[in-house]
Length: 394
Image (tube, rainbow, N blue to C red; front, side, top):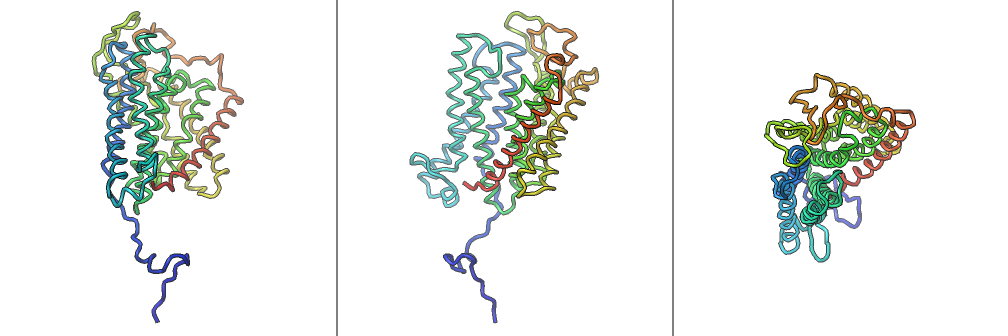
C-alpha cells in the first residue's frame, strides 16, 4: 500500500506542498550588481575626495572625485527607479511577490531605501558647494553637508545589502550570493571607517583608549551581522577582507598620480596624491568572530554577544598594538603600506613617527572596560540584525 503524504498544516492540502516549487539558485540580477557598483563608486570617490583636499585643495566642485561620488546616486536612481516602476506597473511574476508597498508604489524594501539614499546624496551636492563658498575648507570630515551625504551613502549601501540578502534568502544555494552579501557588508564597514578616520585612521592613535573605544563601537555590529546573515562560512572575515582590499587598492592607485597644492599655506610641497591611511587589520578579529559564531551556534545569543564582543576586542587590541608599532617603523615607509604621507598644510617633524596623546588618554583598565562594553553591545545588535537579515525576502 502506497504511503500518503499528509500536510502538517490542515489549512493547506497535501498536494499544495507537493506542487509548490522548491527554491532554486539564480544568478545575481543586474540591478544588484548596479547598486554594488554604486556602493563601491561612492567609497572610491570619498577616498579620492579626501586625498584631493589633502593634496591639491578644493579648486572646483566638478572634480573627478565628486563625479565618482555623484555617480553613485545616479546609478542608484536608475536601478531603483526601474525596480519600483516594474513592480508597480509591470506584470513580472518574480519581482512583484518579493515587494512591499510604499505610498502606492511597490518594490523591494532595499530599492526604496537605496532610492531615498540616492535622492539624499544628490541633494547634498548643492548644499556642499554653497557651504564651501560660504565657509571655505572643511576642518572636519563630518561637516553638515558631508553628514547629509554620508546618510545618503549609507542608504544606498544598506539598500543594496537588503536586495542582495533578499535574493540570497530566496535562493536555494545561499553560497552563490553569500560572498556578494559579505562584500557589501565590507563596503558598509569601509563607510564607517571613513567617518571615524580622525579617531581610528592613523596608527599614531593606537596607544590611546579612545582608539579602541571607537573601534569597538564602529566594527563589531557589521562584522557579527555579516557573519550570521551571509550564506558562507567566513562571512565576517570576507567582509573585513573586502574593507581592507578597497583601502589597499586606493593606497596603491592614488600615489602614482601627480598633484600640486593650489591653496596656501603650503608647508609640505607635495608632488603626488596623498593615499589614505593603512587600514585597520580587521581580518584577525573578524576571524575570531566567525569561529565563535560557528562554535556557539544559535539560541544562545546573549552569551554569544559577550563572547564575540570580548573576543573581537582582545584580537583587535593585540593586532593593532603590533601593527601600529610596525607602521611607525622605517620598514613601513614605502609605497606598499602608503604611510608617512601627509597633507600639504602639515609641518613635517618627528611627530609623524610617534604615538599621540599617550599622556592625556592612555590605555587603562577602565578605558578597555568601556571598549569591551561597546563591543559587547555592538555584537548583540549585530546578532539581532543578522537574525533579521537572514530572514528577509522582500
